Length: 252
Figure 1: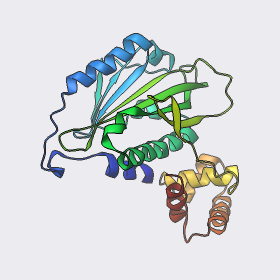
Figure 2: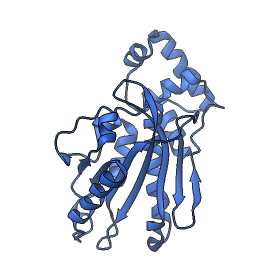
Figure 3: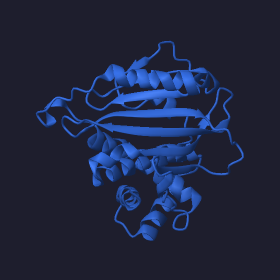
């Protein structure tokens, strides 16, 4: 998936990147994640950008979402918690990736002393244990290293949203000190592309071929080709990958 490659390039780093080793104590952040699961029944994911590793702390919310995590924490060799991510509605998953990159770039652009004031707050759709999409509150916090100024940890929290009457997903960057919205989701291409064209463009961005997209959407390859051509004409780009990349860049 092109956007995941972009995120990996931005977020991941090795000890040798700056010549300075980050001495932040991971156990402190593990305890923080564990506390959220105990006090809020959240599913907490702590990702270590220096070692490309994640720790997933489960709760009763995990069971409601159909996540059967035997270990506490479950440890995976990636910053991407695939078992959780695959439960997110495909449209919301793409927006989540874009929003995370926007958040990272935003924090890079401000005074490092101000970074702890900001976090991500989103409403996303996730499949529960019964195979039904319901709204989940997603919060994300980034922790930069004072030793090498690199992003070291990301903490993601998932819990069932109390208001299931909302009609759409929402992605925000908030200032938790001031209680203000700093950036609201701008990912709305619907005034440019049709819903089907958006689906095709999303799968192009995830690296699927026209044949694979046809199977996923239960349409013919010719129809996929026609949609791809319409996308090129509407966005005035040379190819579908450029269409995805340029549309993606426009909103971060």
